[in-house]
Length: 327
Image (cartoon, rainbow, N blue to C red):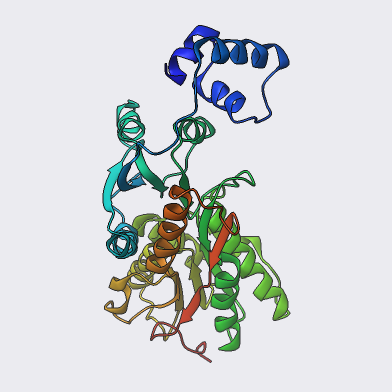
């Protein structure tokens, strides 16, 4: 007897049956009674979790990003200590079929660490199968009962901008990320907070929203730098965008940092080797992955999480891409 059979018999979705079995709200009284009658009639019991495989499944929406290597490194470090395997999956971005996700659920891993944003239906399906999960660096607001590990994005954005105001910059632009991405919104709020603390106006004309890529960073920076009163510094929502700012500056004949200071966010290994080396906010991706894996394995052992959400501190790494503005 499976939860899918119960759902089909009741004429409802698997997540709806999962909510009934786990005593959650959001189901009408009539539907709840119908599902409970079928559960009792067929003697369905929630999986105990004892038949899960000794594997942590690390799920990405996209594996091509530079962040993936740092995250995998942290997951593997913890997995070796606990003598569990690591399986890396990619789904949802280029493949419209649900087969890859179905494979993940059917493998019944010890736990799932999702760098992808899990939908409500996917979360309920994991709960129905007795598979604990942790969301890594969530991009949207999560329900209070969803465990996650993230970074202090607001304070990171504030530290980056404060570094520029302390150097004497007064016209500071930001290439922010998409407006619907939680971490980008937090970094933008930190930028605004630092400007206010320095007694500077928050000028909407100095903020551009762009995807988190080199090319989109370049295009956004060119628009910001094309005005008559160009900014003397740019804070980018991630390192890839910051590299795009470098490209835009070169195209416009500007030197970094003599004519334009640039700050990024993430501290990917490559930015220490660009010319000039990039000042950036260090997002501890490996440490975040370590914490997320420890939490996921603890949940897999049936332990209660000490707290649902955990944010790992960011720090500013100052290199050669920032300097006082030219007089």
